[in-house]
Length: 302
Image 1 (cartoon, helix red, strand yellow):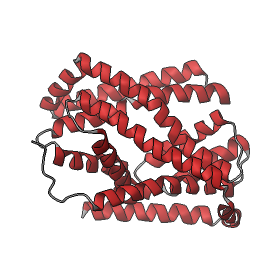
Image 2 (cartoon, helix red, strand yellow; image 1 turned 90 degrees about the vertical axis):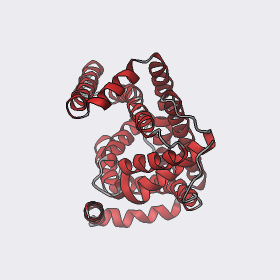
Image 3 (cartoon, one colour; image 1 turned 180 degrees about the horizontal axis):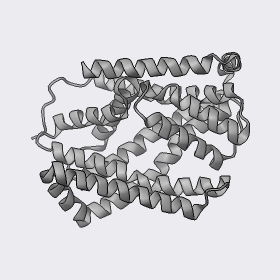
């Protein structure tokens, strides 16, 4: 019942956001431009979306090895594609991780805690690269927020989240807190975190490149660094689990940021967001096919 309620809520929010956007006659009329997309830029965006899946699998495999889980690269890539399908086609980012834990757990029985630890390392390793790119955007855009102030805000946020999670686990899950402490203090963990953080740089660049290629396919020309900032804002907004695949939320974020920074018309901002999502959705469909071909009772390796 809770799952059904959550899906109904997301469907309602998605429909409401899309109706709000398409109630604007300019947006409805401008979406005709989606039929005149430049094929070359679309192919580049499609390739960037595919490479994004590959790099994401590489980063997660580093985290799996750090947590003591051994899986082949092709298996990790296959599970990554299926997780993308789960996230975009049904249950959102959190559910995508849950689906990947379930699929990897079939192949690695008895290592559920290690799999969860690998996801914690995978997500936290993205933070340094995200902060570095955010500071780059701040220096390019300018405004009231300086690079130094942004760095301090990022440091304070990271400290609050780190100690908040630690104190919560220590209070309610002392066994998990003990295991996590040992994991974080291990030298192998620090090495794995550094390697995963390096993989996060091309991963972010490829994620934003998908929407940049979609923008160029629509004829929208925005400086690369500033567009990366707009894509980062839209990415964070879409990650909030209130709509299906971030539909409506991502489009509104692109419309607001690109409109205020560069005067990009609403129709083009919404159109490039939908086109970029469509490129990612193509690879999610590949993941759906992989899921349909997945054995129901996978025999664990001997």
